[in-house]
Length: 218
Image 1 (tube, helix red, strand yellow):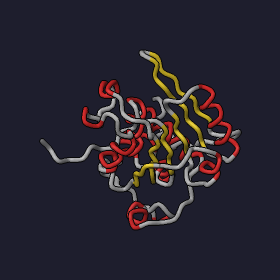
Image 2 (cartoon, one colour):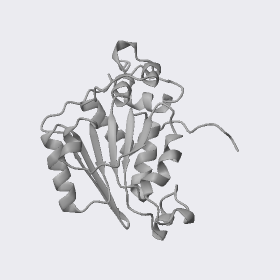
Image 3 (cartoon, helix red, strand yellow):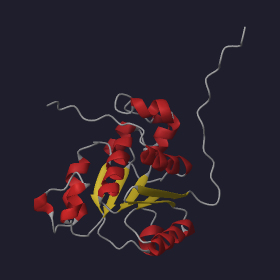
Image 4 (cartoon, helix red, strand yellow):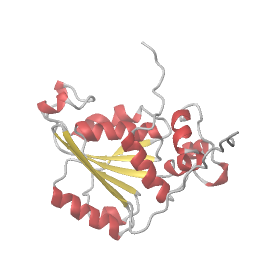
């Protein structure tokens, strides 16, 4: 078996978080890894080997902004764990995992980081160490505090991704995020059906990489 780490690839959900990060990047403090990734200022250096695939899709500027984004992920069942994996591989600055609910036996059908001995344990606590190994540049932690107005208003997260939430819970979260300028993505799966809702605020402007010039027709 190869010890090579997986390369980042531009998955659809990671791309959504990338869009949110491009619209509004978080301005948190620097760390040693930030300096290596160059999260601050024009000195930013991107690991072009690790991110080569999505640099081709997103471009350098979007990747820099992605590397400044702090993401709060709610829910770590099958959909949530897939989002967590892809967002961490995409190269955000940090991911906070919030799912204190005990793992169920039925989770084993879709949650690839859970095993039978984990049933009854908090999903976030079980998964955090494994997720943290995916990308050394991304800080992954468990959020124990309540997801309420105080947390959203704190500025700790620039993007909130909510799964496994009722319609009314998602509306309440979205209202809080809109109030404090935090980008909101709601998603869920119901059997073979799925949905995604994205709120990037009242006004958003998305920079696009320049299109390649085409040769003039003869």
